[in-house]
Image (cartoon, rainbow, N blue to C red; front, top):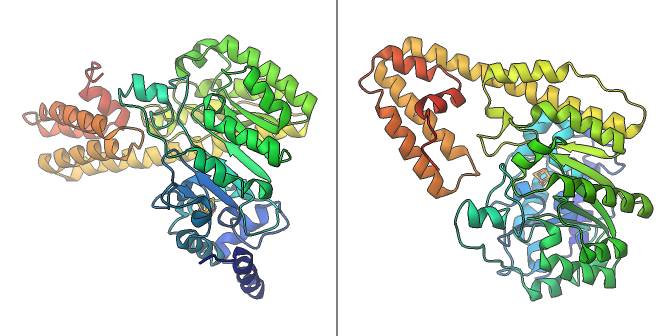
Length: 460
Ligand code: SF4
């Protein structure tokens, strides 16, 4: 049965209004930090947004994709009206974020408001029977093999690094046809990859948008290595805002991170895109991933973006663990914090001001917090070895290694099991060692433990 969402929204809205004094204390500061007029829902995503991922799943945002309905089993309309989405809407209405929205809840509770994903959906678009924002992550087609990426997001990594067959795509002509109904209602559409400018179905969708609703505000996240006539046509006929991924403005670092990327080509394309944005009054931003290999150069990214008068976004890199800063040792994180927090920037306009704010947020709310957490964890293990037997420490060591590989979402199942087996074998060498050796090992930061167990790179 078709559910009239406007009726549902109005019902939820009136329930909320009658109850609007009851914003739970935990959410009051977050509500104050929001700059929109309409704050009736703590998050607008379930009421105005749909996110499609490479395997056909769709949800209000990427954080809620787990166990949601998929295309083509369900049509786009059925997904938007599904019970599953309504359950998320009800949760938001009652400030119950712990089930589907626990990441946003965690960031709200930590007062880490700048990184709460729900803020991305803060807008004053009218609520209607249709989503006003659709985010497309329909294909992993990509020309690069970035060190922090995985095959699910890059066809080149899937083929060359993971040596797996290409992902099969659920998206077809019928998907593009079904979208026709939604395009007139869209205010925004976001395109992610892979590399969007290499994904054929995006060009089909863009052509449809040019024909039906060229006023949609389009955001495309690109690696900046593809710029050709086909791309220019889209940029010239739609309101395209671009986010270019640049992890370093030092050529050598950039090309070590963005494998198969070309720094000179990127800079050349970036300048052309910047000129286009100026001429068409569209937005151009830069997105950067602070990691072990480039964190020292993040201040340079701020200078670069300030110089070019573009906004800088700093992503949180959690996976893969071997690249992410948050799995660095407490000492390393402390040094990173001391260095980064000592840097000052001059600000002469709102763009500079925002870039500096994002940088400070990264330093104070991520690096500093990770450093504190790493210290607590390392101290906990140092304490543990003083009160436990050899067998207990050995077993804790096994669990630590297993958890490390299990929790790294960017490792394929096959690679996880190879790594687990390899490291456990190395650990067995400690069986005949005394209490001191295993305790010493267990007291180290996790990155040092891995280094210690595998002094040579034996897993390719
Ligand atoms: S609260 Fe966060 S996780 Fe939940 S729908 Fe909104 S953006 Fe997604």
